[in-house]
Length: 525
Ligand code: 2M8
Image (cartoon, rainbow, N blue to C red):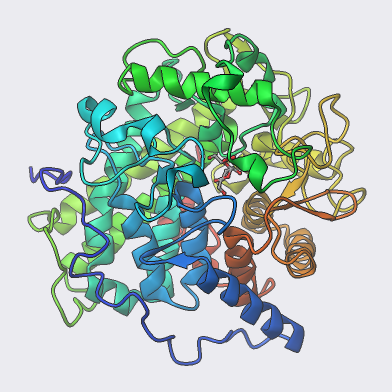
């Protein structure tokens, strides 16, 4: 059987030949083709596009010029999802640049550092993570600096959506052919090396890995970590962020201690982790990735049999799929779907609560399901194969008193409005975030809740524009917090503008990789 995971070769560098033009011209007519777009939509589109261009640094885009001056993993996936409508070649480049920082064990680091940015601009900086030395046993690249932890796997979904926006350009560039082996290696790492509890679910080993850094969901498992001494590090985030909105010094000390411990264990997952949590949002995205990989495999099979135009040029770089037959790719697609079904079952069995009507995190070190209600527990709504009882209950929970969507809030808050830990302005402890709302909007649409999806879409767009594309918002007043001109806020607004309200939306990219009818059925657990 041909070997698909062609990691004998290092992933491409951003300046490899397939990354030819860092500033390609726009697609003709790329200035918002959605016929339902109003003048205000067009203005919003132009402003969003300006944000993405301002935040562009070479072959990728920083989340924020001030607060986050490097490339972040799930940020880049969301950025590519927006960028695909405007500059599909740039969207492909965004993902490929990130995957150039992938480790040989398959992990995609949560930060790919820019060598041009001084260490003092962001903490923890490359000299803290020491990826090229401490990450040696796990196969960290030696030609660039990265962090050693990960973020949620939105990338396969992003790659699939990016491909669908410009299939001809994508095939011609060999985009999916090159990325698929890297995406499957990433999936394998999370599904196998990170199944720390043997539950069939991936674990996060640091709160930052969830992307919802300071969520109250982490308070209990984090409490057993001894914080690093305050004088052993210097926070750079407080130079830009409002201290009252940012994590406390004590929590920051715990983040530093956890990351330093992982580094000192040379980023192995074979020794016990002091913090290990099965997070429902992270796992929902892992399942959505599996479905998207199924789509990608079928697309590659079609290319292999000539059902799709093979493109004018040959893919650049090593072609790990060269000897893979269409039949083998179909078999792979079936395996992706069956893994998605299995994991959806595990998610429901292990993390669902009938009494709260949502999913919960499970602390694998303490051996307890955590009572805290975070927005992470709503994200499985994204899954087409979520069983009807859980889907119906999540829909009720979303608009119930704890999240208030459509009554007390117009955007989903990141945390339980009634929880004692809720804070309307503090990082991930209550404010509304645009990426979470985009995922929920998608989930609503996925389950046929068009009116609610349209309402949420409208709220996201209004808030994105009014806040100057803020990083996050007070869920009650929509007062902006954190960085402004934040990349994923701009990108996801562009995506919603381009795909249009219900009826205009392209079904195939609404369903987390369910473009093929067979997959829609196959996704059912
Ligand atoms: C925030 O996380 C970074 C650490 O990764 C930080 O607080 O310094 C989170 O909001 C995370 O989800 C996001 O990816 C990152 C960059 O936008 O910022």
